[in-house]
Image (tube, rainbow, N blue to C red; front, top):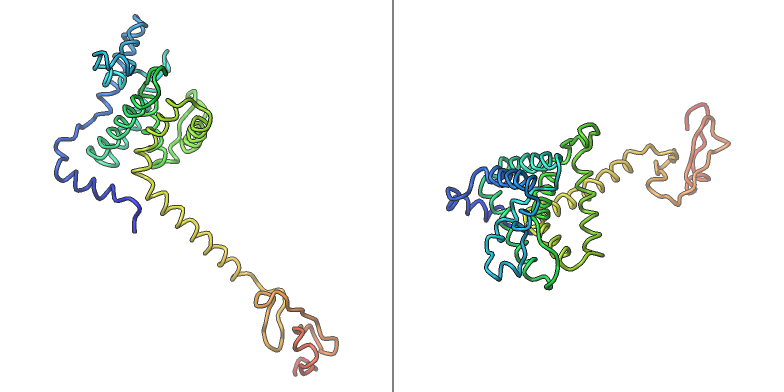
Length: 271
């Protein structure tokens, strides 16, 4: 039985409410990020109004519940590359899953991020969308592990290795980071685990079975080095068995310890 039935549940949800899903939601987000990046290039302080600050939300600045989604991924010209990469990955997930499933994936990441922000101890730093983008990156790299990115537009790297570095970074944050970043990391991987835990479990179990089958196949396919000319036993049948050649038999005839002295000697190629 499957550990998680979320995909079956999403299928039912898609049939009932799929028409209400927001298509091309990644494009809407990256358009907002691009606009924010242009505004911040001339007015750097404008970004301060976009961060998710829970105290400010409680004081009435409710737009921060949404505006943090449109914070661009970094500063400088490489921001455009980050925006394009997010669009590429998000669009691929929407095509692979369908609009509603992708909407739900982002919604889980969004709600989990809000929960982490408001449940974290007071006095910690502002919250951005970096971990939401991270969850999209992890999903894309799991579905398309051999997709090649060109770092600095020159060095080709398969995205699965960058994902591995991301997982290592998340592990370090969970071990040594502050409570807010720990909570945000957990929020980032919550939707990934809901969507992929079942697949990962079955892949690991299938991989284990495949490895066991391969080991057995190798073991069974090995050519025996020793074989008794009387009973046919080999070292694969009994690893403790000793084998000897009979000096009284013509030719190379090997026998196990049980038949070394009780066999009929071969003369002229015949028993």
